Image 1 (cartoon, helix red, strand yellow):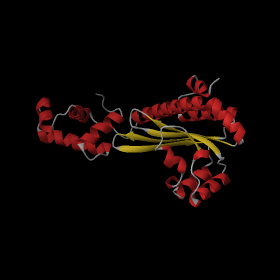
Image 2 (image 1 turned 30 degrees about the vertical axis):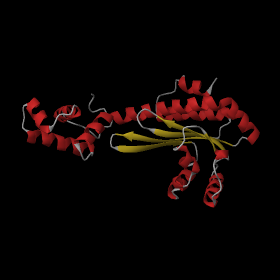
Image 3 (image 1 turned 180 degrees about the vertical axis):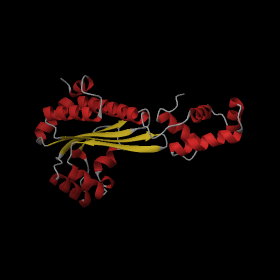
Image 4 (image 1 turned 90 degrees about the vertical axis):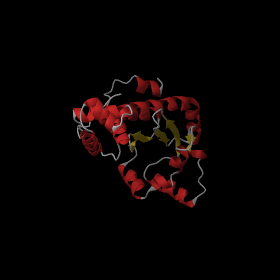
Length: 239
């Protein structure tokens, strides 16, 4: 069965652990040592990074502490590309990059890998990578047979992960807007000014401004437009 088909038809719980478990099983069966997923998702006024990987915690801590994202060619090239990137083709000319990959190997990062850039309709960007200790001949054979399947698998994982986190955010109990605050934001989403909303609701403009300030405070935003965007992203209002 294709890797993508296994993920698509999986009956595992639609949770973070469920998705992770399915992916680990696929990787184990296909001779893939590790997979990694890095997503930069635009959420209202914020950009949220999501990282899922089977690499060891020690390497993740080292990567973070040393700010390796600034020199990692997989990250640098991946976010500029639309096509899959074979790690063999990455430039290793810099002594810093060579040292980076040498250190990565000490933490179990294998030399052969493929990274698939992902862009979605919500301006979200992600990188899905597989990493293997296969010898070069087996790796070339694997790519020839599985590249298209890997690309589909990457996009499926992205969609399922995005759906999980979107659902998780929509149930965030830390943001509780009152009915009036939601109503004011709904009118704002339609382009109404505070004065126009006050006329519609039959209250003073000062009252509308009060509700807008409260909503902005609860949503941790600086402007009315940002508050509307974040309220929609969190599922507090629907337009």
